[in-house]
Amino acid sequence: FFSRSRLMADPSPESAGVAAPEQAAAPMEVDPAFPAPEPASPASPAPDAKTEAYAQVSVGFDLGNLFCRVSQIDPKDQMPTIVRNNLSNEQTPGVIAFRQRQERMYGDDAIGQLTAQPLSTVCGLKKLLGTDLTPEFIKTQGLNFRIDSATNTIDLTLEDGPRSVPPTHLVAMILKRLQQFAREQKDVPAEALPGAATVAVPSYFSAAQIGAVSDALLIAGFPKERVHIIRESVAQLVCFHHSHYAELHATNPMLLALVDVGHAQSFVTLARVTKTQIEVLAEKAAPLGAGLLDICITNDAVRYVKEKKGMDISGNPKALARIEKEARKTKEMLSMLEPATLTVETLTDEIDL
Image (cartoon, rainbow, N blue to C red; front, side, top):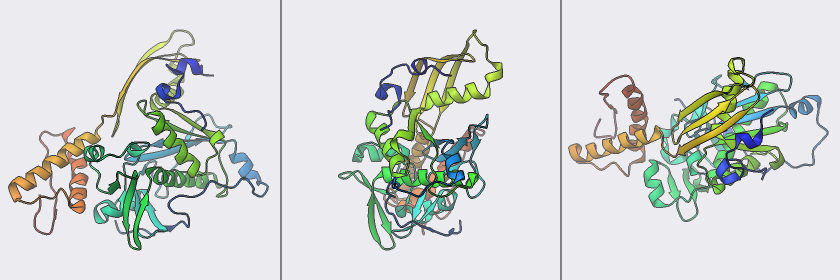
């Protein structure tokens, strides 16, 4: 239906963003595999009818730094369905909170742990994939959890001792959790796999970053031959085409400028769209997004506390997590009000902000 050569400005994986298949605490979940599950063994009993039917389904993951979504489409359906999580929400926060080696919480259940247990709770993992986690890079990202630059791993402080986990394995846990929601929607066995799994990545992702996404999918249990990785700009264009198909002309193309400002990246894409074809004319992406405002507001608050209160909280993970939580709210208020006030109650035992 779509011309692949027209969708991709450059056929190489690196430039096209396409990789070849290569607050009360909620109950914790126990997963015997830590830090990540092994890919499913090919030797398994004969699949039942539901499992065979699910093999015809395609699943798509929107992996964000703040929130994640998963959708799936059955061959007999004309529109994809956004899968709801265990709280019936269409989007799931990309957060994992750990207590012990085998105990963890995900998404909405883990949000409260960002301020309560910042050293055992991780988020914003997408921007860490396939990246050299140097001290300089870490300083620009406003991360509360500890990172070992020598091994490119995240150091977690758990009840039963410290653990070091690569970002790829943590992303695999999130993907596995999202896939669990998708299976529950279709009421299929836990071992059932979709016929295809697609993840969209930013256009600026390098070959190493795309490879890390592919590795995360493999660790999550998706066979390499069923994995498809595409650019986020292409995914947005396909979504537009699907939802506005009735408005498109068969031969006279619509000129479309697509602007997307995300948490950690933004892009602009210029394209021509008809009923049968999407042609990308130009695109520009940059690792700049609304998340930078969170970091700027947080850094400004840290400076204010040091100058006015005489206290340096830059090394206090709990205080920083509380400021970052309120910084996101302040950023949203700034879109409607000017100025907006940042308020943090009980920043530390001694002061409020």
